[in-house]
Image: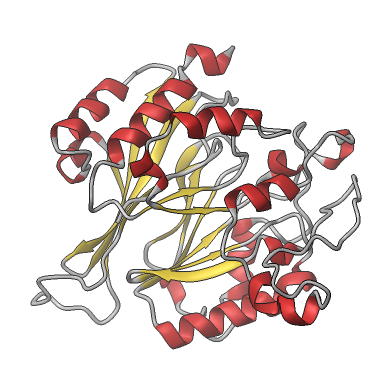
Length: 334
């Protein structure tokens, strides 16, 4: 009923289709709990309504607890849950297993996902390598993972990802995960703030405030953590679900294109007191889907300078714009 009252389906589709018209929007990112879908029917309905322009953008996503156990945790799982197996196939991310498959899956080395693990309804039932990914998009580096595995299972993957970042030297690194705290299937030490703190000791990720994170799970949107000098953690979990303490519905907009600066804006489409959806939508439509001329309708969460940049730097090479949300999910532009 809450989703109906807040028009979560129609507004998500309409906003994404509008924003995707901007040729300078490069990617969408969803931080898990993708539509609370147990068997694929809800996902099909949504994607059938999304435009080809949306589907042509880069999509980065990580699983949440409801993508593994639709009820939200292993304590209430049943045989009808997808346990992340549907998620890993439908979203087909460029995961680390694809680079390890020849050694780990000798019978079918061409597969980029691991189907060999047996089903365990009380735990993460698939290889966490099916959900671990790292890459560069433009001048930003991204590392995505699932919190339903132990750190020991993925520690070597984080080391590999951080070494990659050392070689590529992105302007900033973003850690992407679902859980903002240790509960509902998240393993000990695997919440995003904990992992963020832990990998900062690794070569390539020991870059101080230049490694930041987005997470979801709790249905709120806010700056979550300050680093030594600036904001490093951002919770973007409010996009259609009810929460205690005041409901929120919005998305984050990342812009790394402006004269050696990284900016993160938060667009609150609706809360319990105000509804700004039409204002944001109409502004974006009037500018071809672009949000750059609509930031007066957003809160500025971060405005920081690139490492080593200077005032004479007029353009940012390989800059990006992006939108993110948790359906928890998030969308990302340049």
